[in-house]
Length: 465
Image 1 (spheres, rainbow, N blue to C red):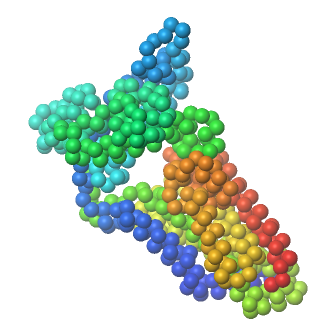
Image 2: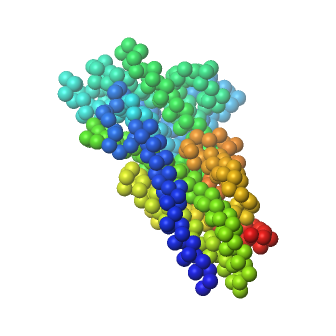
Image 3: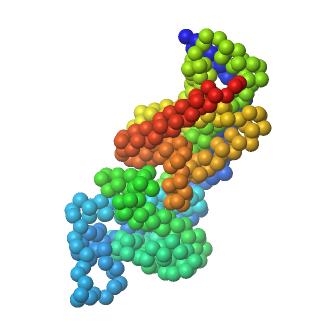
C-alpha cells in the first residue's frame, strides 16, 4: 500500500511537470518530423513525381537457377579435373529463384524511394506511357526495355541479364565492395550481367547507374553473408528477413502512380519511429536521476527511510511512475507514427507489446541504477545524457541497423537498445515475423531490466540519500 501511495504522488508530479512532456513526447516527435522533412517524406510535402523515368527489366534465366554448375563462375573455362557444382534441392532452388526476383523488385522500389526517379517494369510502363507508344513492345523484357528508351517513353533502362544470379554469387567479394577499382568501379554493373541503357549515355544515366549499383551491391552483400550459417548470429534481423523471403511467394513490383495532391508518405517512418522512440525511452534515465537528486535535496528520501516503510516499497514506489510514463510515451509515439506519418505496425501488431513492455522496464531499471550513481545535476548532464546518446548511436537508433558495420552490430548486442530495435524490426519489417525471435529479444530486455534493477537496488541500500 505504501508503494502505491508513493507511486501516486510521484506520478502526479511527473504529469504536472512540463519538462517531462517535452523530453519524452514533444522532442521525439520533433526529431521524427524533422528527419522526415529533410528526406522529403513529410506528409503534405510529397511534391511532384520523380523527374527521371526508369524501366527495370527482368531477363533472368530462372530455369538455370540451382541447376548443375550454377555455383561455378559462368566465365570460367571447363576443366576435366573439376566436377561442376551439384543440383540444388527443389525447395532451395525455389527459394533462390524467389530471392532473385525480389532483388529486381527491391531495385525498383529503392529507386522510387530515392525521390529523383520513377521506376517500373516494361509491362507497367507500357500501360503508363501507352499514349507515347505507337505499337506493342517486344515480348523479350530486355528488348522491350531498350525500345521504351528508344521511343522516348523513359530515359534509362536497367536490364537484369540471364546470368545475373550466378554472377552475384560467384563474383569476387573484394570486387563487390570496392567501388573505386575492379570490374564494378564507377557503378559499372556489366560484370553482374546488368545493363544500364540510355540513348546518349549521359544525362540521368550516371546518377541512375550509381543509385542502382548501391542497391544491387547492398542486396548481394546481404544475400552472400546470410549464406553463412553463422551470419544469422551477427545479422539476425537481415538474415531472418531473407529466410522468410525464401519461404514466401515472390514479391511483385507495384505499379507507380502519380502522387496525389498533398504528396505521399514513405515507409521511412517505419525506421524512424522505432529508432527515435527507443532512444527517447532511455532519456527516462535523466528524469529519474534528477528526481532522486531533487528528493535528496528536500530530504524526502531520508525521511522515508526512517519510517516503517520497507525499502522495497520505496523502490517500487519511486520507479513504477517512470515505468508507467515510459509505457505511455511509447504507446503515444507509435500511435502518432501511424496517425500522423502513416507508418505500419506490421502484420501482427500485438507482437509490439512484449518489446514495448520489456524495453520500458530496461529503461526504468537503468534509470534507477544511474540515479544511485550520480551525485549532482552536472553529473546527470555530463554522464547520464552522454551515456544515453552513446548507447543510442552504437545500437542503431540514429540509422537503420543494417547500415552499421558488422563489428558494431555485434558490439551493440551488449546494449538493450539493440535488442529493442531487432525486436521492432522483426515485427515491423518482416512479412512473416518470427515469434520466437521477438520473444528472444523480449527475454534479453528482461535480463537487462533485472540486472539494472538489482544493482540499482543494492546501490540504493548502500547509499545515504
